[in-house]
Image (cartoon, rainbow, N blue to C red; front, side):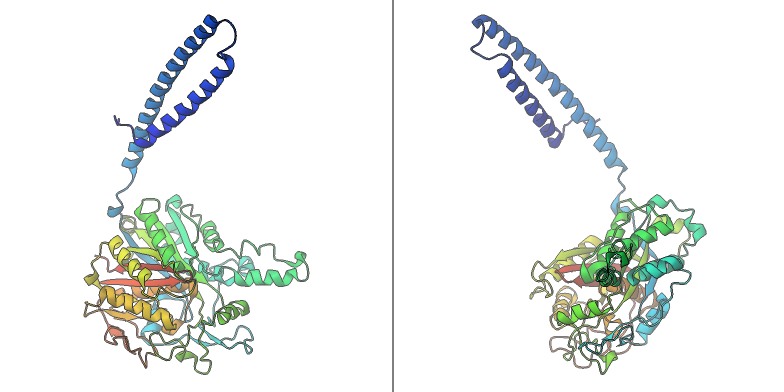
Length: 499
């Protein structure tokens, strides 16, 4: 048992005693006023009460000391039970995607390696009156076998993409229903976020309200919230561990992945589904980004519209979909004989604290984020030889990130940098999820995908650092994946081959 009382316990005891004594002294002033009754009797009564008060204080102090020591002992027991974070390694054992380039991790990545663009004219609704009429739109998608038909009719697409990608990740990770039934479900969690949430469900509710509230979907509020996708998936699986969502605009997926990994590192979970999902391709979503003047208007040549680091870029291209990982504690994965795709090393978050949509002009937040991620992962700068950049094809964002990358890793002659968004467009909150999959697939295959449309690079860009128009061989040592979001949210996560 500890013999030393912590400062906080001492403070608590002192505070309690002070309050008790003040109350007693206040009581004495009223019970034994100085000028009432016979002088001797009043003095005797006050002296007797002071002795009682002193005894009460000493007793309280002794009991307070005992309580403090007891609390200290209990705290010591709790601290002993905490696992050593450094010893709990986190590995990737499953991947699931829903993207404009396919709904299977291998199909998706092979299309990236082949330089296939998923950007085309929007077909879902009439956008002829919009200055932007192109997107990374998913043309074919089915929930059959993944989502109950009754729910599929009512849910927003961001939830359908999320649940489908999540279950595909479980299947990809060999976590069959039979095997899932053997897991400790109190130690399995879901942390899949969304930047935009159920935009279509909420928009439909507004339109119904124009007629009458009675016409509104009774599920319009829960199905519009960003947390409900994770919640519904957890209900379906019966997973009772950490369950919530994070919404940090375009950095959402990385925030979710790192937080999920930390739950495992801290010993709070053994298995986590994590990533992001978004379905913003509806009139209000397109119109909102048009109003921000953020989108490319290269409607005549959609596949050429997303062109990170190219002088002729004129904004990003919206996309949609979901990217989900199965993260698992290493020994837990080994025990069930899981296939390990890569190891998650660590990551970091920072905030530019500068502007809602523009990066800091000196890239301070980005640089700090990368440096903190390296520190968290215990990785030296020289070990990074592949960066999957956030690079969205915007004027300032691309260059500030490039400068930060070169500032951190420019001395590494083997460094290769690319942008998945040149082919998928920007999947908003899901971007980091599918780009994490791309980073892991680069580790697995030894190939990094090309940068599409880099035909006229910016003057400050060293094309020797950027991957060219064809896929390239790269034995990835450590991969860094960046995601940045409106509001100045920066995130960096790192993966490496499992050894």
